[in-house]
Length: 241
Picture 1 (cartoon, one colour):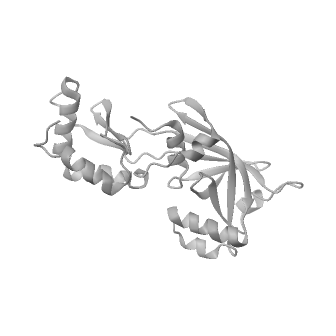
Picture 2 (tube, helix red, strand yellow):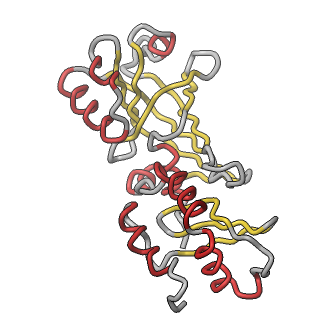
Picture 3 (tube, one colour):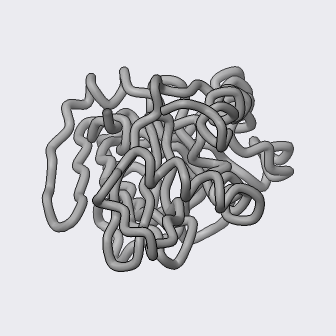
């Protein structure tokens, strides 16, 4: 089992990766800080006096600004494959009063940065209504229904993926190699040294020399602690397959 395009898009857009904004009637992309709320709507944290704030001002006759968020995956390791790129299109409106305070709390769930304390002063929050989502991987472009995107959930391991892979490499290389060879059989040659290069709620990708393979977990995991519980028997040298 693998994550769906909608799940990958939600994972990429969640707020753990850098993004740039392509804003209508403004030349060139602009770096932008963002997270997404529980419905997948991007929340944009913008300095109140900045080129970005100026670009987000609605055109005459409109209440919001049209833009596209462009977010590329940053693989956790140099040898890790990319999971793709997502474009989220829609309209952003400035939030004030109770809406801004509620959005600041939502933002802090993903990124509890100090600038949230200045929302309404030196910082402004915008919320995007999503109209279109496109996901690209290996030059294959997929149009994702906005409702499917909204209903999907970001991968719970993405924010700690590097730490998890590093821990396996530092402390469980032998056990992981044994497990991979048991699972792949003749496909894993004795001289290969399997290394985990990607991980998500459904499983992990291992690289063996120039080859790679995906191995699924017995079930999707819900968080880091659930993963540790699931991996304990998998990494035990004496456990049965």
